[in-house]
Length: 161
Image (cartoon, rainbow, N blue to C red):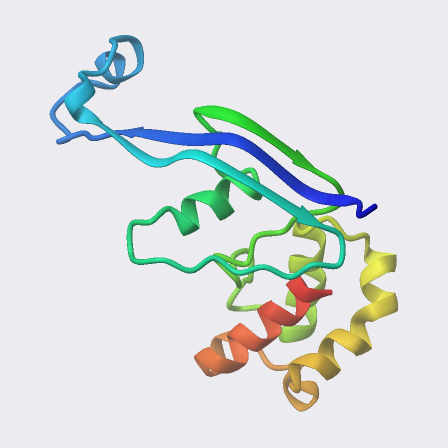
């Protein structure tokens, strides 16, 4: 029998459209008009087992990013249940948490700690992260001088490990 990694049951996420004219108080405490509601996700059921790979494919507005944000706990669902077994990190905004004035080396430690790793854990896999990124010769350079591709490769390498 396979062990679950992610189990999603009846997941839904509702947003309320706003034209910006309503006060925060009215938005928070008054029941929204049904015509002002938008369901980005409704009735989603997914089982992903350990060792499996999966992809989310669909047109713009299908809810792909919303689902990933819910899985990484950036957004809370409106309805349904999510069971996660193990660690989950979002790569939607890869590079978030990088400080442009710091070197690549310093950003590996900074971003690793933001993603929940200890300094000791990062030190143990630092060489693997750098090797995977292919940026060994640039690690002591501030990332503000990196190309966008270099920046993304380093950010992805930290998140992947």
